[in-house]
Amino acid sequence: MIDNYKFDSNSPSFYEDEFPKFWQMTRWEKLAFIGLVNKINPEVAIEIGNAQGGSLQVLSKVCKKVYALDFSNEVHGKLKNEFTKNVEFHTGDSKVLLPEILKKIELNGDKLGFILIDGDHSTEGVRADINSVSNNYIPIVDLYIIFHDSFNPICRKGIITADWTKNDYVHFVDIDFLPGNFFKDKYHNSEKGSIWGGLSLAVLKPQKRVGELIVRESLQPTYNLMFKSSRYNKITYRLRRFFNH
Image 1 (cartoon, rainbow, N blue to C red):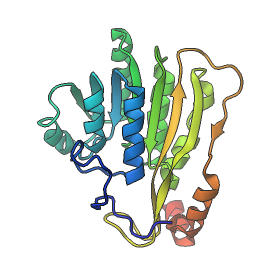
Image 2: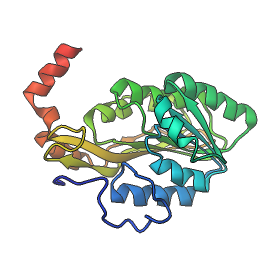
Image 3: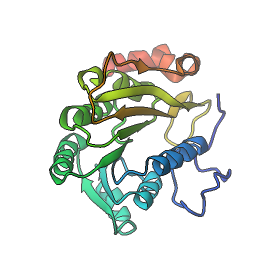
Image 4: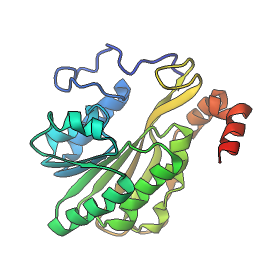
């Protein structure tokens, strides 16, 4: 467990000069993300949830074209002035925008190779973003999908309950590609005892899979330990969620 890990700490990632923008990922998430994007080298990518442009700066450097989706006009108002060459911004609800963009990519014959889902952090929102891809797109090259905050119980439920098995082109899913963080004390907008971070990975291929799809949770024991001590396991949190629903 990590006590008061600060996402904006000055601890070296060795990429500060190359990617200077503020980035709401841990050091190991950044290193993994940079390594994956460079290794995959996608021609076209989609990023859902753009925040301060931390991960977008990596994608825009590697990809020929990036579709950036966010519901906030304020976010895009700032980023549009910084990413002017190969980033196309779409502002609004990803549940509406994503199927339209996927259709455009399909019609253009573009080689979509990477998607980062880091937008709506509700269970329904995460599940909807996944299903939008699953129900509206057949890849023409290997497609890698990364989900941030997979250790957050609310986001995690959305990933787990998505319609993975209904898509014959999904070949691999690991909810726990990288672990998340436990916040012992309150940090920024996160309450004491929150769990954030973690990366999930899904791989779609142009060929249909053979055999049953296994949705892995390879770090479930680690997640269970964090959850047991977290605010999400408290009776007060559960009652509040129950009455809110």
